[in-house]
Image (cartoon, rainbow, N blue to C red; front, side):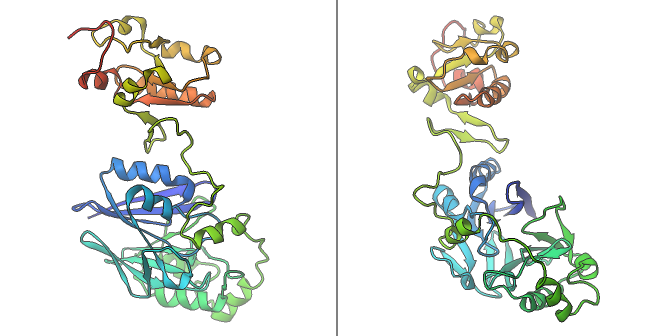
Length: 356
């Protein structure tokens, strides 16, 4: 059984795909995006997965891959087509190679034409095909740069993708209109560039006259992707705040562990957003904490000091999660105390007031 997640980067309209074997929890991630690495790391950790490798469908021109950052964060291997010409990969694929994760595998099928190194990945039961920029939903990748070839792309799609079963689900590398998936049968029949009775010369004529501007990030993305996404010296890592060992959840919330807060209480403002009756109740409160109930926080954000990061806390971490969002929206450095006072007390950390 497959665990499957389709992930989206809004800026580049890129889809990334996480697949894992349910039994072994071994996973692969197709086409990760540099800016989304904190999100992917959070999801992988929350689901209890081991990321074996990242797979690239090609050397992208519209975004930078997150492969290098994921290898640094999770120890995953970087896997891509040998024909892509990138350096720094751990494994270079050729047509017909298998990428295994647990008891499942993806077959690498060379589908050049958009670029020389385009690779599509087909699940072992032929139920899913990840086509990158070769075949899109009712479209296809452009062929006017990175050694593209319309005629080669036509043959790649017809020979390597359209030969799959009609019911095989097609998952593209991008979509700009909100569609998430198609099928081989649909695209073979309805794709206006490639489907039906359209011949190779028809397709080449269409593609040679698209007249599109080059991607805005091409001059930055292609060189970076030739290095598997290794950041340049002046390229900030995604994730934002670095004042503490923060953990970003898949929901987009920054969390901090109680033990770190206990050891660094003088460096942060602990903001308790419970009600006054809870502050001195059985759970007690953290020494030096400022009491400001969540219902009053919105009207007092401007009065909070900005010389220190803020750690929001409540009973369980739910109300303080909302407080953390409000604090960040107001431009403050902030994090949620994971597990709230329940976890703080469970770890035996000191409180004022409170009981057994």
